[in-house]
Image (cartoon, rainbow, N blue to C red; front, side):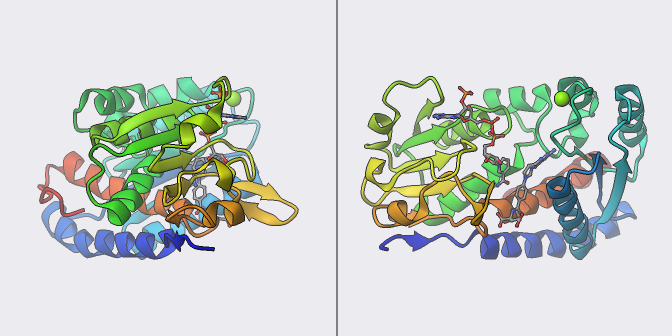
Length: 291
Ligand SMILES: NC(=O)C1=CN([C@@H]2O[C@H](COP(=O)(O)OP(=O)(O)OC[C@H]3O[C@@H](n4cnc5c(N)ncnc54)[C@H](OP(=O)(O)O)[C@@H]3O)[C@@H](O)[C@H]2O)C=CC1
Ligand SMILES: Nc1nc(=O)c2c([nH]1)NC[C@@H]1CN(c3ccc(C(=O)N[C@@H](CCC(=O)O)C(=O)O)cc3)C=[N+]21
Ligand SMILES: [Mg+2]
């Protein structure tokens, strides 16, 4: 193996520590701590694990966590009523409705109901539009965390060739928008791409958000490339990413591991977005670039 391992777990711990450092000044100015509401519908064990660790890390940063666990048979109307209640609650700065939702619920209808100024996931179309047009808004946590790791490793991304594998609204598309904003030259590839390895051969940056274990092979990569593995796949051999780690690590310059790479950054960025939301919602200034 020749690649450096990008330690997302350590970077995320540092980011959470910066969030925690900024909470007391907010509390002094606003007379309350930032609050994050997390809504979980149903009993998916993986989702329950994420929601628990979000709550724990929120409290560790000195912020308030409001956890709402609803049964799987909750109606769309009842879920939307809860979102309305959280939108109206001044103690709640951020709202996260854990995805996926049960089949009988229209995810888009629920996400559309969240006040965009409390949408710390950055999933509301208003926030997607803000990102696409260069306005201030909330950027989805996973791509934001990937960008932080890339800039920490590479510095200025101007002119670098980046390939994003995947075009979902929550990872691939916002990742491509962020890289474009950072002046990288961006290619998005997906399941209908002809000759996908061809595009990877010249990429300085590869972000894999495919949802298929071991998808990206080392032989496809440009030597020295920086590889960000977003994938979370549960296999008999445990949790693995979308990148075939062993072959990729022998070609890449740097690579994120799974676990311990992008995952912890997602939660740290959620807490970061909640802190920013609290400042905006309470009208308290936050020094530019401080977080
Ligand atoms: N670490 C973290 O914090 C997070 C991790 N994840 C993980 O990231 C991965 C991606 O998530 P998400 O974006 O939500 O997934 P989606 O299933 O929504 O999107 C997957 C994308 O990959 C593309 N794709 C699928 N198969 C292929 C293929 N054979 N060749 C090329 N492209 C392909 C799809 O193409 P098409 O559009 O044509 O169907 C689609 O655009 C998953 O493993 C998920 O668990 C997700 C969120 C957070
Ligand atoms: N509204 C919403 N927002 C989300 O941000 C959201 C969501 N729904 N639904 C599910 C996906 C997935 N996701 C992850 C978060 C943290 C880790 C994470 O911390 N992973 C650890 C390992 C955790 C483990 O061992 O299972 C790691 O990679 O090191 C992974 C995945 C957020 N998501
Ligand atoms: Mg559904």
